[in-house]
Length: 254
Figure 1 (cartoon, one colour):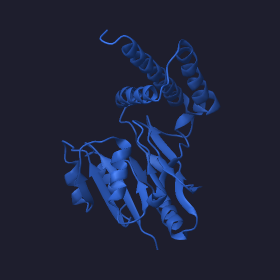
Figure 2 (tube, rainbow, N blue to C red):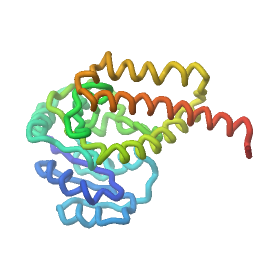
Figure 3 (cartoon, helix red, strand yellow):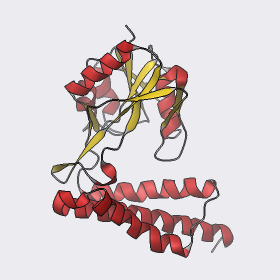
């Protein structure tokens, strides 16, 4: 039977790491690559019996590929510290890997907890993530943000959800939006994309309509309204930051 190696990349995740590792205690191997945390993340991971490597931060995709390269098994389950594998998902993962066959990766639906409830609407759900994959068939791309696994071959779909606890509160959400939109704008700019007036005028309202109406954020009440608004703000801020990069490029030093 093929084994499963679970990999996590971390930095200052002392509040999450114990629970994240406990939910994958069933795995054949657990590997943590820590980006020089200033808290006790690495020590807690070692106490949990994991292999721990401390390494300077090279970017999301590069760090995740490095973690996969350390694994003893080819099937990799890549987990973030704020995610939890339920017993149902664990059973489904083990069964999928044991089946073998032509499938080289599996997308997993992700269910987020936000403002006191599970979110089953907006762009947040089902939020399929290709997290279980055969490293012989591919790996992580190296985008600045929202990196993903790219494989060559057939990709299957699991039904049990990966539980996600992305933000402590709205302030934490806003600080993450600020960081990710900067990285996203830099990615766009490096790819030659440019922002125009119509982008700022059209895309944020379209994002709100998609989240709140088409993807049924309205069903989640006030939380759905708040989340749809913040998802729209994310889009707006990324275009604004792209426009700012364009101005800096056009008028250096000003």
